[in-house]
Image (cartoon, rainbow, N blue to C red; front, top):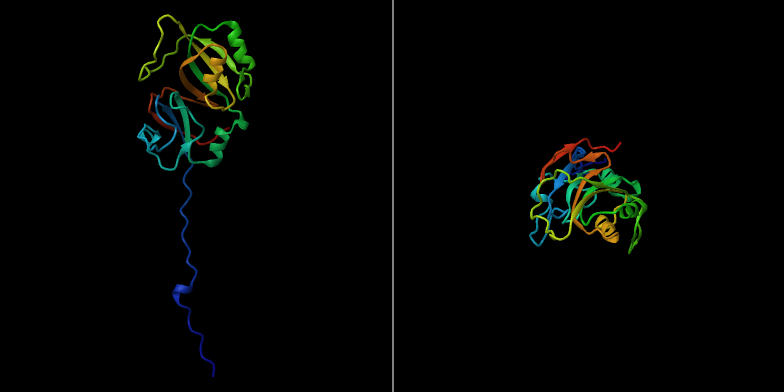
Length: 205
């Protein structure tokens, strides 16, 4: 006489872990202050994004140098992050740049045509002189030389090389004193003050 099958021990049953629902996509625009690193941690105690954006799971889409100010996008959507940050998508980035000196028509045309840098020529850029824009005071203030006039330019580039705008203005004889990014593609600062941020629709159309 055969014995009845013994029930399996509960421990032998497959254990299924409930998956957490995916986080809702978020896109944040921050006005990054001067002297803040574009990262959330720093072992040297310098100011980072965590001092301003207390949102878990978001990361910068692209970079903005510590000594530059203005628009920085953060998202938790990897595909959107790649579309914003990857130079292949050629999103226009607009900068207001305070430079030493008074730009000549020839210098502005050089920037428009593309300039030769140590890592190769830049693509043509949008370049025009601006009246002094209404911006927040920088902290600390820019150091000026009394004997040298300053001017403001608007530069529009579609690349993402390291310190590209500063190198471009230096290459044509106009050293950068202050650099503020005001737009990336369709997104702008739209009145945000340094350290302020807001949510935006998380899409790129």
